[in-house]
Image (cartoon, rainbow, N blue to C red; front, side):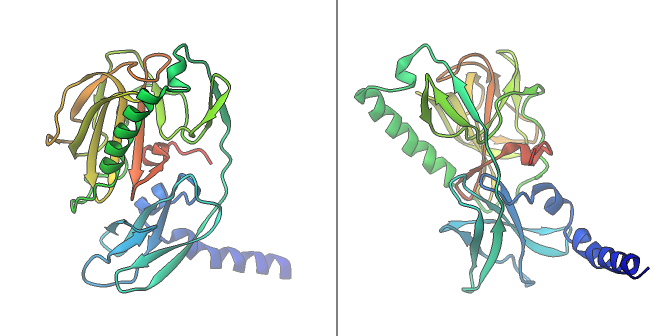
Length: 276
């Protein structure tokens, strides 16, 4: 009887913790490398300013009740304690949990997409610098929605974070989520945003960056056609372009990146498809 009473008491004490946080916290709080940490902030009239790894962080008021920081965690972060900095000099700690990412082996016909020559390497570096600048964009607008729509309707193929081996040689982990859909499939904006970058890149092929607000950026690549230009304002569901196989791709598919505070994170989190 004593054990039963202790169990009931433990459950009752745990309920408030389970009930804490609103819909956004329950959707997005996946504090793992390549994931997202949702952190409750001190109450104040205006949105607190928050930085993580020297990058500004998305802050919203959840359910009209409390300020929360939505922090993107780079894949390179090791499990353990991390810290955000508030504008008044305070620091808040949060815990990053472990997550296992499998390996993926891919065969490419074009060896230049595995070991580029010096001329291609110079092009790749120029394109990388341009894309990094896009990822570092931070506009004041609040995202229209944080439960994203899928940019295409199709099977999820290559997941985020897998260790990738091209022709037996290890390269950077997969920084996005792939959808296996036919060439020509229309691509829709998962949330409203501004087109901030359009390019045709060595690895990514035809590419579009959309800024959803406060450092939340979507990148779509390997497109066959781009139907927007820099500066275009897209509504949620707005047309971006068409699926293709340009750049380093073995066949038609959509590769979708999501970046938060310049950290590439698992897009599956934002569509409710995250797998621990």
